[in-house]
Every structure is written in C-alpha cells, then in structure tokens.
Image 1 (cartoon, rainbow, N blue to C red):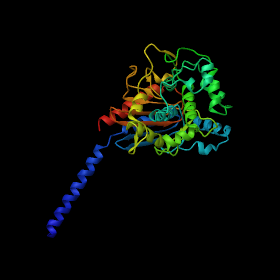
Image 2 (cartoon, rainbow, N blue to C red):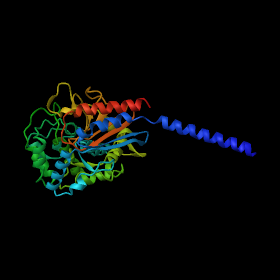
Image 3 (spheres, helix red, strand yellow):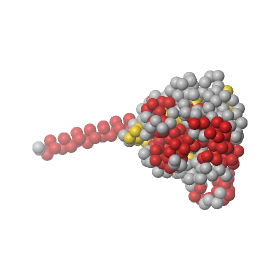
Length: 373
C-alpha cells in the first residue's frame, strides 16, 4: 500500500467513525425538557430530587437537582437533631446513590416478594388469611383472601398513617401485628371496599413469614433484593418490618427492580418472577361499584393491582401498560410498557400539594422525549 493510499484509507476511517459517533449521539433521547422541569420544580419537591430513566438495558438519563431553601435547611436540621442524627449528613445533596425512605414505594417490592411464593406453589392468591391465622377467623375476618390483601380490599377499617405507625412501635412480632389487625372493626365487604393502608400488606407479609419460617427482611433480600443486586435496599431493620412503607432505597437500586418489572420478571437473564405473576400484579382489582373508603389524592382515577397503581386503564381485571407506586415522601417510580422504559423521580418531601399534576406532567415530558428519539 502506497503512502497516498494509506492516507486516503485513514481519512475514510476517521470520517466513518465520526458519522457513527454522530449517529449514536443523535439516537439518544433529548431530556433537556425533563432537566428544566426538575430545576423549575425542585423547591416544591423538597429541595432535592433525582430523575433516573432506564431503557434498552441501561440508564439513559440520570439527573439530580439540589436547591434547598433556607427554611427547608432549618427544618431538616431540626428534625435531624430530634432523631439524634448528624444534621450535615442528613442535609447532603441528593444523587442517584443517596439512600432515603421510600414509604409506599415499598408496597411494590413487597407485593413482588409475595408473588414469588405464588410462583413456587407455596401460596395461592385465593387462599384466605384464616388458613394461616385462626385469630383472624375468630374475629370474623378469616375469609379475606391474599389477593384482597395485596390490593387494599380487605374491608378492614384502618386508622390514619400516624395511628398505624404508633400502633406498630411496640409490636414485637408479625403474629402480634396480626392480632392487632384482627381486632380492628370492618368498614365494608372484602373485595368491594378499597382503603389504601398498611393492613393488607402487613397480613400478606405475615403469611409468607409463617410459610417460610423466616423474617420478612431476610425473605426480601433472598428473593428480590439479592437477585436484583439491590445492595442499598432494605425495610429498616426493625423488629417487625412494615411491608407497606418501611423501605429504604436509592434511585439506582430501585431502578434495578423496575428494570426487572419491565422485563416481565427477568433481571440480567435471571428469572425473578414469572410473567404470569407480573401480569396478575398489573390488573386493576378495584371494581366500578367498589366503595372507596380512602385513597390518596394524587392517585386520581387510577385503579389498583397488587402493590401498584394502574395508570392507563381502570378496567377491572385488565392489565395496565403503565404502572406506578408513589410514596408518601414524594418519590414516583413508574414502568411504561408501550414505550418500554422505566422512570423514577426520587425525592423526600412531606407536602403533597400539586403532586398528581407534577407526576402527570413529568411522565408526559419523558414520554415525549422517548417518542421523539
């Protein structure tokens, strides 16, 4: 090969490489609108927030915004001191690896854990709680089914969140938690009365502990957390786990779980849940004639499956193509099957005013970025 020919080949290779690079860059979704939205809304999101988007086997967007107001800093440090924690550590900027309480985002994790027992044939969603706990039967609640527990349709009257947390403080075992629930009054017919609370998932958690002889936290690590490489996710390490709300996680860790849900039960080639169980979880269980005793305002007209809200269609027993499980502190995870991606807004904020509108607005922006890719 002459020098002239070699030089021409080299130029051709460089041009080709540049074109391939530009093609790869242009193929990436433009999330600038999501970034602008995050910056504009961060103060209303608690002053610290992260957005993580996963698609095609990888995280394609990871953006944090931190802008705590003076008032938020003062309140945060006051809470830290009351809890005996380091104020500076608690008030650090959020990143995708920051570990924080995820509240009701825990419900999705817990329902998935329960369904691993269904996959193994050790549990049936039509089993009754009375089969495992005679105290429930003795108090007239033995006919409540597992599927009703997973979808907040037990018909048992629940107290406020504060009351639920207070009542659990002195509980020493899952059996004690079940006894406490057994004594609560009924407010409607099981399967026909929706009350968003911790009761159903607490019962479901107690059942799998009874079946396995292991505590809830260990079961989660063995069956979901470990296989999905969620090394920074747990349920608080207390004496008794609260499956409905005691979870801690990071944006990246929780995204690993979402990626498994998106892949219909598979994480990095390993089957965690059957596709049948994923589908069962994503069917709306709330009938049109169901009595809505209590539901968070941000849920709007969403239906509910097992541990997750159905976002795109509230037809009873029909699978949804978009599902979510937002938490009390503002975190908003979702999976969209039509566009085949997952999203997670990770934050910590007690104020819920305007949440529903922000959730819909953010998802619409991200959907648009994915569609225009």
